[in-house]
Length: 514
Image (cartoon, rainbow, N blue to C red; front, side, top):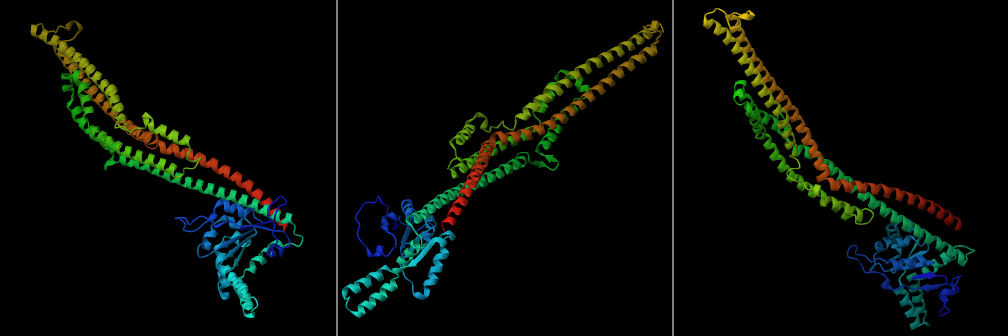
């Protein structure tokens, strides 16, 4: 029910009432039917007052709430914020405990209510059925002194008069009470209710923002953990000497070294045109194939991780479906990333550095070694041929019996010419052997540099795959949500400052009205 002062424009049937005549100002009473009370919900199990009824109670100059503790527990009413909005609210509990327990029940109900409600709410215990019995007894035999005594006992025990006294205390709280002063206090209560509603909305917005921030931080921590674990899982240690890349390169070097050791200077001469194909075949069939197969297997695991992380991002948005966190723009941008051709993790995602570095070792160091072999063969062959020719010239003079070689004209006798020719041949061979060995050492130095670059390329490729493929949706979503959270926090703080200013002004007006 709600009680308010009548306006001059009200029209209706005016009937005299002794109940209303006891108050110093004219009153009108409006009763809200029980249909305005919703049925107990499955979640809470208690009845609650709907929004329309709460608005009526807020508009009332004096709100009177009847509560049957058997059908509606007091705890259900304590969760309705309207109780603390109207400063002139009377809670009538339609049950009267024994007199010795009245104060205890009053304390229990008061402690169950919010602190703001305790200051404004008046709690009364009334037994209407006992008052009705008293009236029936008095009507049945009003001339009997026993009936009159019983009427008085039952009526006083019902505490119905406490409702009238509470109304008088509210209406006659000031000596110079006027209709405008009561409405002024009611208007202040309505403004306070509006501020309370805005503050509650801000609290809900801040709680939702904090919940999103916690979920984003949790997802970011999961992303960082995935990045760290990827380095250990994908490029994990396969031996005690180093990681998987180092172990694969060592194994490949051992296999290639077998081929290189067989390419001595003597064998190099007979297969000089096959140097590049032999080394190329050794490089292509080296132990790095095992690491490639391992990385192809790891791309499957990265694809599963990508699906899980992406699903977690969309689940986070679904858990916070209210704008601005789950906006259509953000959803569309994330779906575009998923639909892009660069999003898919393929078997070649992690292995393309092998092709690049393998082509590099074949195209440059191997080709240079091949060219060096050809040059060594030609120059060494030329030196040996020159030495042989010089020795033959000396030997031919001796064979002719002249005692001088064919180079006698330049002062070389037979022995000197043959010795010089042999020296030139040996020096040519020695130079060729040294040149070939230095060329092979240079090829191994290039192999080490390319191997180091391969390790860096694989780690960089893995980082790029994690950032641009596996985690791109989650990282983009977290970044956008972080920007939205920062903007939302700034807006909430700005509105809170304005509400604090309005609350301070309202408190000042409230103090001046008392």
